[in-house]
Image (cartoon, rainbow, N blue to C red; front, side, top):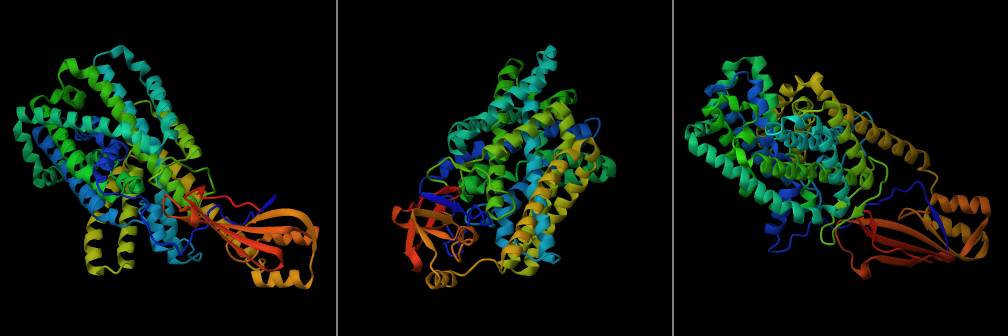
Length: 572
């Protein structure tokens, strides 16, 4: 059978009449299991922030003093509460598109992908695409700084190993990207329990540190954060804010990875495990610094007994490998949504789970991220240097997310005054952190912004090119009824055999029109095949395809597919 594919038809034709169904089917009794898996996929990044966040924030504040230690601890604590807990876990995660999260999901909810050029909606689309592209910039920095910060712990006990830190980091990262093809479900089964033990370990270490200097709990009061920022001066305050922001980077993965696990498991993992253990560890490090300011050299590792340093380095390295998984999984989800909405060219999408449509692996994206990550490790060389590159992309992404979330809430009919008050508050917080991170632009902040700019340019170019092509060919398609009438009025020569023509679900594909125009023949059996993407992990056998007889020896076949995989292939 001959196959003719219409090049003007997108790889995926979304079905607007399909019922809205969540991408993740959360059966009863599964949220706890999914929450455990989410610990490895979603919270690996933010869960390993204690390796470097407090250290860099206090160093940015100058010589450690009790006032600065308590103030910075308070700042980190309330950043976790306001940005991650209140904004992302409670507010932002309500804006899902058939179970999927992320910037592109918000663009779909706002329905602005077909906005005319020059309109405010088109400008908003550009902002949204820039926000989506920022995730890729973050995606190359996160694995680099996470693994580097863990491997650098070896220098405490083995100083001569310093020159091997970068090669070891590259070797570990290569292994991480190699296992991606196994899928987030398989990875989560292994990573989830490991991260549960990691959170328990850092929580216990922190509890031990707090028990030796319980006065550190005074930092729970927001007045310590406010007092420090007021008295430190604008330059120091901005530097500290930019460094303290490292404690919340990774929080955006909660929303980006929502399609992998669902809203409830992700919230359970955060409020029941990740948040309490992170707070305990940060306060444990603060307690250590109150007793011994010289421990600023590496407060995370020095919080543990000397005999535990090397085992903790090994455990931290494993945890940072897992940390990188959150951003990689988010990049897969973002790319898939971008392709479906026409913002990126079609790429290979492999579904890695039978129960969750959101669990995918994209080889092309995986290895592009790997190349960028290796480049970041080689270029910057240390976690301190990468700290300057980290944060600016995430803070800008969080700011854009807040704006789009407000527009989604207004579209859903929420009270405008309430939306302005709530989202306005979060936007103000985002603006402060973004401004503080802008001070690191020349120190390395340009690196993720450069990557994000290239991706955003590709997205906007692809969308504009698709729109121009669609406009040119809009009047070239022939309606179904008119084409059949033409065949009946002037029958062409029919040759033996069958041919399948791939095209849209309506009208006649241009490929068939040109074939008839230039060759003046048609096969005896002509099958017009179209595809529709559905939002469920499974399609029942009896619903996978419909076949409709048409006049003039034509047959139309519609197939339904899940994500990037065809549910059935129709033959002649």
